[in-house]
Image 1 (cartoon, rainbow, N blue to C red):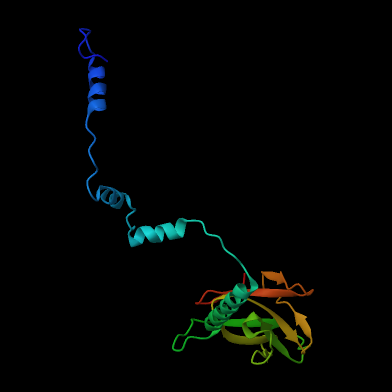
Image 2: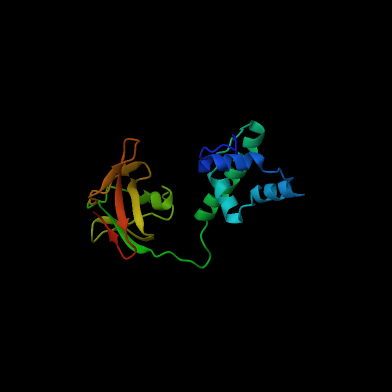
Length: 191
């Protein structure tokens, strides 16, 4: 471009010419380091790091040497947890209700009758019924915790008899029928 010519120069051309003819200056000492320090990533807060750690996908390598100890520890913790759930808590009593079991036997044909069920692990010990000649029936009154309890009468130590008065029963999966009594903490309910 010729500055001596009389042709009008546009503003854009003046700016371009000014930039081209401008003297070049050197960069101040440490300028690059200061700029890069400002661009360096800042350390995220602990909460941000935790969120990122929880949400970022991770690769997991499974080997028997790592899995077996983890499974062993998990089994021990599970067994301790189950054992502590079954263990009675000292000083804590659970409400129980008196439940009356009755099996009619007007002819006194049976020699012995016991109530076996989920509440006594299906063992006749301590669940032997007494014969009441006035009622013509075998009778047992015992305390049961709240819940539903399956039971049958064990007649003469060998014959299982479902309670004919129980309105709810369940097949035990072995060809027998178990009667069910519901205890709500205040009394039993034979439904």
